[in-house]
Image: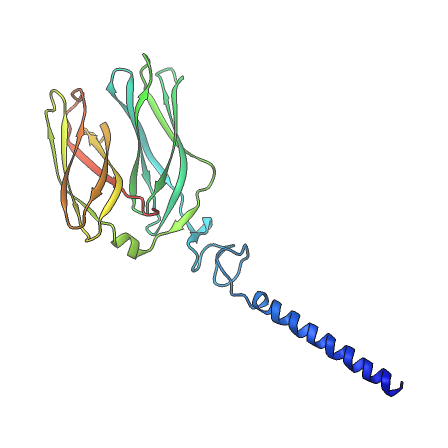
Length: 257
C-alpha cells in the first residue's frame, strides 16, 4: 500500500468518525432520556406501565374496587321519580375523573320500566351519592332499582393530601320544615378553607327510623367563597310517607377540574 492509499484511508476514516460522532450527538438525548409517565414503558419506579410510583395514574391492581352499597328511587310527583345510588370508594387518595353508569327501574313483576344512563366522577372520600332526577316512568310504579357502572375497569387517578386539604365543606345545620304539606329542607354550608369553591352539587338523603331512604334531592351551588357560610334549600312538592328521622348531606366536589 503506497502513501497515497494510506492518506486516502485516513481521510475516509476521519470522515466516518465525524459522521459517527454527529449521529451519537443527535441520538444521545433519546438514548439517555429519563423515564416519564407517558412513554408507554415500564420504567423508573413505576409499578405498572405509566402507573404507580410518581405517576398520576394508579395501577388497577393497586386500587380497591368501588362498591355499590344500595340504590333506590322515590316518587316526586305522579309519573316522575328521583333515583340515587350510594357508592363507597375505599381508596382515600385516589378517585375517578370520568365513569359511566346506568340506573334501571323495574316494576313488581321485574319488568324494566326505565333505563337512565349518565356519567360522573368519583372523589377520594369514603362515601358518595350518584343522583338522577325526574325519571319519567309514565303510569307504571317502580318496585326495584338497580345501579351499575359501565365501561370496564375505571382509570384511577391519584389525589394528594394537599388537594384534599384545600377543599373542605362543613355541613352545620339541617332544618326540615312543612313536612305535612310541601317539605322544605334548609341546610347551612361553611367553606372551611380560604379558597373559593365553585360549581358543585349537594345531595340530600332523608331516612326513616329503619334507615331506609324516604326521598332524595340534589341542588347546585355555583359559588361558596372562602371562609363563608351559605344556606341552600331542597324542596319536595308532596309530603313523605313516613317520618324523617335522619338527614344525610353529601357535597359532591370534582377535584379533577
